Amino acid sequence: MMRIDADDKRFTYMGRIDWENKKAPVWVFPCTSVKFRFSGNLLRIRVKNHKAYWDNYLGCILDGEQTSIRLPEEGYCEISIPVVHKEREFHEVCLFKRQDSCHELTFMGVEISEGEELLPSLKIPQRRIEVYGDSVSAGEVSEAVNFTEREDPPHNGEYSNSWYSYAWMTARKLDAQIHDIAQGGIALMDETGWFCEPKYVGMEKIWDKIQYNPQLGKAKSWDFSSYTPDVVIVAIGQNDSHPVDFMKDDYEGELAGKWRRKYGEFLIKLREKYPCAWIICCTTLLNHETAWDRGIGEVVQMLKDEKITQYLFRRNGKGTPGHLRISEAEEMAQELSQYIISLGIEGW
Image (cartoon, rainbow, N blue to C red; front, side):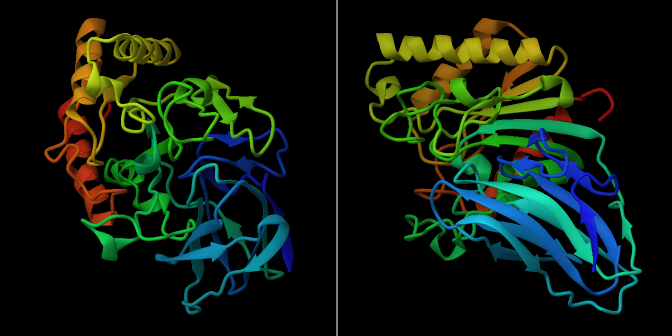
């Protein structure tokens, strides 16, 4: 077998990745991926898993056919991936992170047969989007399609698939790269939401990080000069009602006012990082009170920035209880991609 390390230039990466060790890049966020082509009919990947919770899976699309690969709970492993279409001269592969920071994955490279060839993937999109969101943006429980319009089934990570998130679907419809800064249970502010219960961590703490889950180690900052999106989608405001739905219960109260102020400050921070980007504020089809959309709308109007807008989906807040399934993510992606196109972004 011929070993090819992760820093080989023929690999095409996408996502917010920790490149401190060039031969062992760490994947944290959903939709993080690597693409390449290879000749021959043998493929083995080398990875290392670091688990916080749930069972962890790696996504793989080989010659257009998608599978999920169960990862070990901890440590290094080599995984052979069966090649079905052996008659092809070259095989195209996309390996991707299906889940959020329930685990971190270190990609260390691949092995192919001696005498065979590794080639870059065929295309790198020029358009760029970035998403800040929660479990819906991460594609959590999206594959539980038999439970559409029903509560989530018992699960341990096996139904989560970022490929079927509205975020990545939207990027594919627009032929765009994506950085998906999405975490299940996340709210805007610390001490709200579900992430890291009972010491809740909010988006205000993780948005500028590569690594951020305290269960997995020390936080690490992101270099924003590494990736500049044309469009930023902010889909926060659905887990924020836990443990108290202060926006519904007391819209003019202190906590609701604090949230709107913090939301505005977050948008301003994004604008400082990305002076020219369109910023689209939304929630999703996930069930939630309309008071949150009202609050987001007021903040957007207050900022008076023509490139910061709000979008409301036709079935906003009226989707499957628990989490959205594939068909609902497709519905969102269709609407959102059409809305983005309607903005008339220069170069798009």
